[in-house]
Every structure is written in structure tokens, then in C-alpha cells.
Amino acid sequence: MLTPTVGSLPALLATLSDPRGRQGLRHPLAAMLAATVCGILTGARGCEAIAQWVRNQETKVWHLLGFRRKPPCANTYRTLLARLPPEMFEAMIQRWIEPLLPAVVQDGPPQAVALDGKTLRGTLDAHGRSIHLLSLFDQQSGGVLRQLAMPPDTNEHKAALKLLKSVALQGKLITGDAIFCQRDLCQQVVDQGGDYLFVVKDNQPELKAAIEAEFQAGFSPL
Image (tube, rainbow, N blue to C red; front, side, top):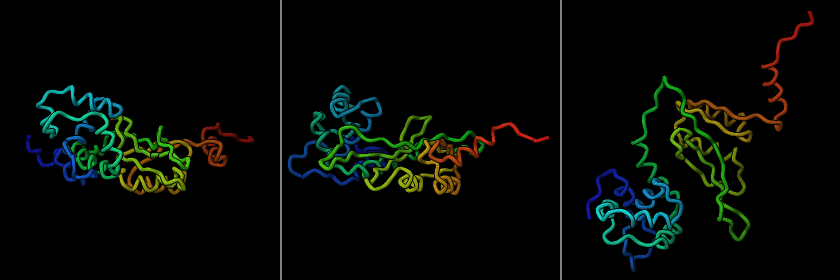
């Protein structure tokens, strides 16, 4: 097996704590997680597709990922991912990808980033709650810059205040629907060096009327 290069994805993933027991471990944690990332980047959606993508590769690709033998089946990925804390996995991927992102061009057009919340299908628990994620979505690359699992007692507006603090907003244009059109959230975006474009609807009648008035023709009694 090849030694992973310092700073590479397998090398960073090897620093994570393995949630599996020591007995019966056949496949390195870093290899399985690197295979998961590569499979998703090539369009795999689910453990079956990830396992099939890895097995379709040549042996030298298996070795580059860190496998010592034939890669495992889908259930092995499923068991591992169910035990692995997602925050740890996401943080390590962020460390890997951030040096590869292009630098912000100060005089160029702003980078459009959407604030959006989604409830994950198939995550309903015994108490009737599903996992709801709030994400910062890069509209140009199609990638998620950051995401936050929302507590059941927090709305998207309050969660967005915390999520935005984890990202440099210089050169970014934050977009979102009407729930994000709040004074404190807009002020935070500006304070962090970004810009915003949020929808205004009937739930804020005075603000909507003031904006509409700016686009009406002037009137003079004379």
C-alpha cells in the first residue's frame, strides 16, 4: 500500500478516530472514507453506488485510496457512516478542499451563495423529528460550503446567524428567501464584508410597501 502524501485526502482522513471496534477490522478507515468522497464526487448517491464505483476501478486506484485488499460491500460503508460523527467527517473534508479553492477576486463579480434549508428524507426518528440541515450553497460550483444540523427548537433565521460566522463573506453575495430577511442577519452579513439579496413578502407588509414605493412614479399635486 502506498504512503499517502501529506495534506492529501487519505492522509487527512487517517487522523480521524475510528468509531469501529478493533476486532475484525479489514479495511482502513481512511480508505473507506476516501472512497466515499470520490464516489460521491463522481455521482454516486448511496452506499450501493459507492461500493460499486470503487469495485469498478483498477487495482492501482484501490491502492491509491488506501485499500490493502478488495474493497468492501455496501453494508460495510453503511455501518461505518452510521457510526461516524458527521461533523468530524465534514470538518476534515473542509480542511482538504479549502486550499484548493480559488482566491477571492476583489474587483470581480461577487460569488453567489444561497442560504437554504432542507429536511432529509428517511431520517424520521421515534419522536417524530427529521434531520433538518441549513446549508450555504455555492451557486457557481454547485458545492455546499458549510451546513448545520438545526436543533428542533431553532428556526432557520437563528441558525443562519451561527452558520454565517463560520465562513468568510468577503466577496460573497448571500441570497435567500423571506425568512432570512431580518435586520440582525443582514447587518451580520455586511459586518463580515459580504452583500445580501433576500426576498420580501407579505409577512413584512411595511417593508414591502416601502420597497414598492421606491419604484412608483413620482407624484406632484401641481
